[in-house]
Amino acid sequence: LIQRALLSLLFVACTGNVTRIKALHVPEGSTDTRDHPIAARVHQAVALGDLRIDDDFPGGAFVAAAQVQGGVEITVAPENSPVNDSAWFAFRIQSATPREVKVTLRYTGGTHRYDPKLSADGEHWTTLDKNALTVAADKTRATMTLTLSGAPLYVAAQEVLTQDGFQPWLMELARHPFVARASIGKSVAGRDIDAVHVREGDTARDYLIVLGRQHPPEVTGSLALMAFVEALCGNGERAQAFRQRYETIVIPLINPDGVADGHWRHNLHGVDLNRDWAFFRQPETRAVRDALLALPKDRVAFAVDFHSTFKDVFYVLPDDAAPSPLAQDWIAAVAARLPSYQYRVQAVTTDVPAASIWLNRTFAVPAVTYEVGDETQRARLKEIAGAAADELMRLLLARR
Ligand SMILES: [Zn+2]
Image (cartoon, rainbow, N blue to C red):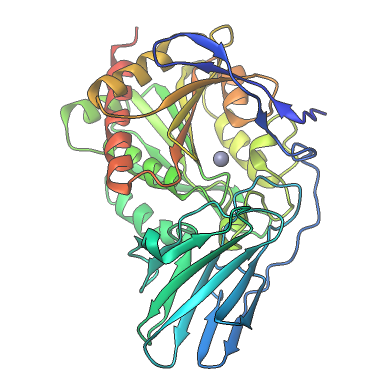
């Protein structure tokens, strides 16, 4: 069993210089992927004076709401511990009449991370004005001033994008004659794990693997994955040629239960799925593994696993583990195309049971963890992901 309190990382500067940087913290015990008990998510509605606060929608999550002097306090807690400090919250708030209200998020088991996002309909989101937010020095509390119209207002850590939210996108993709949908298995709660196959005609012989959303709050990773896949499905000559040579298998939402219940990191068994890729104790990782092992092993060319973190980062395998410089060539090509793109490249150690390591070892291919910043501007992250898809198609078409 791999139980490392610290995951050491090498830092590869964009210039190619390799320097050791400070170790990244991995909570002790968070790499134990045996089932752990979690706090059952009780979706609730609370009436406080003329206010109604609820999390009775997919992705909704808070543990308590109470009236305090000057406003309302909402308690936020993780599904279980230890867990990465990615404090997700999502609720709806409504007042009987239009007014301002002060809402304090009280974090237990973690600290404030995400700039609150607001929506009237749960689909279109804006970021709360920075002047309307005060974060305590120790980040265990964040107080926001909300302007209520009398209609419900969604307030969430990130845009709420659950399995329901993926359905219109999947349906739209499946209108292409070269896109086929499938379910590759079930989550702990019995939700389908959706897959999309993109291939044109019957000449495709090589494979690209695209994975996403092992970690529930990582919505920006999902937004990038969607833009990336849309570029693969584009009308241009390059995309068409790519689809004729390469089949892409996309598994966009590996942890639908954690997303539905507003988890900070884990599945319904309290496990970080991206630490289960040596053990396969969880049904979600087993389903993805089995779907990928059904591909002809020596025909897989490349793999990308989408995530989110504080900044835009590409995690690559160290040079001695990667079978080709294709990953570095790809990132350099994206950077050359977007001169003001701020990003880092980091080489991971290979003893962490993450998807990218398993993909590299199983298929002997470059496997890149594509991390999108939590607050990277949405139009920008889509532009970057579209360019990244285009450059990867160019490089893979030029291969051999
Ligand atoms: Zn992640």
